[in-house]
Image (cartoon, rainbow, N blue to C red; front, side):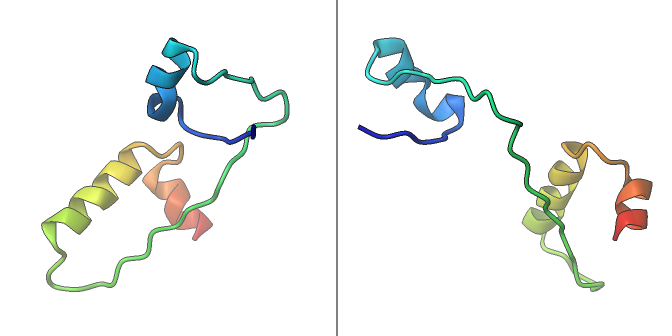
Amino acid sequence: MGVSMLPSYAVAQEIASGDLHCIRQTERALTMRVRILVRNAEFIAPAVRAFITTAGENSKLTRKEKIAGA
């Protein structure tokens, strides 16, 4: 028996089958600050550029706020 924090999509099938039970967190939501630094280079690999774009699109901050907070 144990407790773990996992994304719901990772255990959806186990919850649906009854193998796992979901315990709702009552405490304040957990957050993590993440910063992405990229070297100013002539070439940035397409996969890296796609990651940075995706991360930026999913951020709650605007580009201006990101730059000001750096």
